Amino acid sequence: MKQILFSGVIGLFLTLAGTPLLIKFLARKGYGQFIRDDGPRGHHGKRGTPTMGGIAFILATLIAYFATKLITGAPTTFSGLLVLFLMGGMGLVGFLDDYIKIVKQRSLGLRAKAKMAGQLIVGIAFAVLSLQFADVRGNTAASTKLSFVTDFGWSIGPVLFVVWALFMILAMSNGVNLTDGLDGLATGASVMVFGAYTFIGVWQFQESCANATTLTNPGACFEVRDPLDLAVVASALMGACFGFLWWNTSPAKIFMGDTGSLALGGALAGLAICSRTEMLMAILGGLFVLITMSVVIQVGFFKMTGKRVFKMAPLQHHFELKGWSEVLVVVRFWIIQGMCVIVGLGLFYAGWAADK
View 1 (spheres, one colour):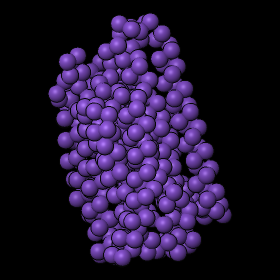
View 2 (view 1 turned 180 degrees about the vertical axis):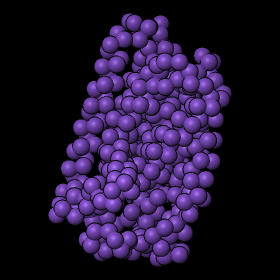
View 3 (view 1 turned 90 degrees about the horizontal axis):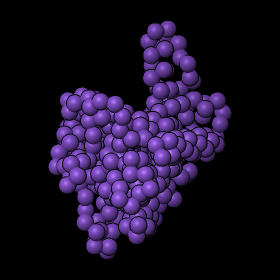
């Protein structure tokens, strides 16, 4: 359990101390945010704020994870490395998108097809690798069965699993990307979900089928590969995002950019897939789902009727245009996200207790 503490503290310290250095570097290079002209007027003053801040918590997470392994002497695991690969790969796609925006001074970076291709390459690599290299118990990092609190039903097969994993990865990475429209909103919401996955990983480790001989009810164990290491990764991400939030909260000194939002979404999807809690992610990350659905509804309704449901999508901007201050929207949306995490963890515990 020391690993969880070390990874969280190291991640927190690195972003608290390292983000100001990144801010100075980006400001010196002139890598500032481009603001849409059709967005809320209050955002125009943010033009030029350093972006690509996701670099800070991506590097902090990677350093925190490997430093923890070095300090404790614990080995790395395939599941942990796989989630870090997904985070880093999606972050690289986002970095290219951000860099093009800055160089060409436009609100759109990579072309849609190029951005999607990058996400697909990383997502397919993750999905295929997650079904390889079984451990001594025969468990791979992911399962071809659907899951809520644990796996259920029949196997959907490797091909459909890859499609399902891609859907989750794209949905979560773009969901976090859409949420990242107000200072600190996506960062604070992500901290809560990573905290939930730290708890889930610890619980699954304690109730792991690998420890079946010491459990009071071996039939209620979790058949998850490397649950403790998934908790270490989640803790590193939670600490790194927490430290970044110090600089990203209103008024933001730096934005995470697509570099950060795609990386966070990838990490969330990876944790859900590897911990066998895929459908539970829709509840734990409820704010991301809500904001994504607001865009789907807005676009779909406008194409059918020529009218808009919201003043502006994503949803957070609708409330800004209704007169809510940015801080008010962020805090209230954090409360909604906190409630989603509480409900999700409650369902996780209830599912385990029902098997007991």
